[in-house]
Amino acid sequence: MDSKDIIEKVILQYDICEYVFGGIGELHFSDKTWLICKMDCEFYGKSWGCPPYCGDIQESIDKCKQYQNYCLFSTVVETENSWDYNANVKAKKHHEDVTRAIWKDLKDKSLNPYILSTRCTTCEVCACPNEPCRHPDERLSSMESHGIMVMQNVDEAGLTHNFGDNTMVYFGLILY
Image (cartoon, rainbow, N blue to C red; front, top):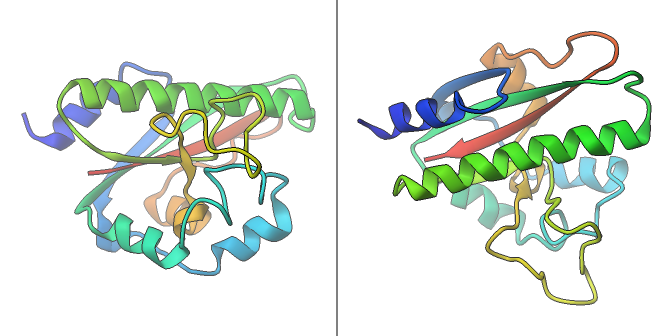
């Protein structure tokens, strides 16, 4: 069984909505994604898995490009009110838990993929920037922290990013 078959078998055991496989050359990268993070994300500068503490942007892009293939996947959570902050946090935590479980299962099957997601949720409150990461082996970095143009890649892959009112969609990326 090749890596793609193993990954597909593993992800289908989880609450995955959609997924697509492709070659790394199909993904769009930009060193400008950090600007989006800085302007729009409340976790900028507050997480070891996010800019600016997650490492140099060009080195992160280059690390991704060392892999040959990817699997882009989504999870969807229905909520009573998609504008509810606590519902958003809970949905994102669900996505990160699924992503982390997939990562563990793939490592158990002797694959060593590089996994990116929305942001790290291992700790309720990140130690960043005052203390070192408490769980560096469990830390998930955001796709944007690695220069990945998430919505452009989602659109070009044909994945759905809007299922209507009161749904939240999150994306993860497996590089292998």
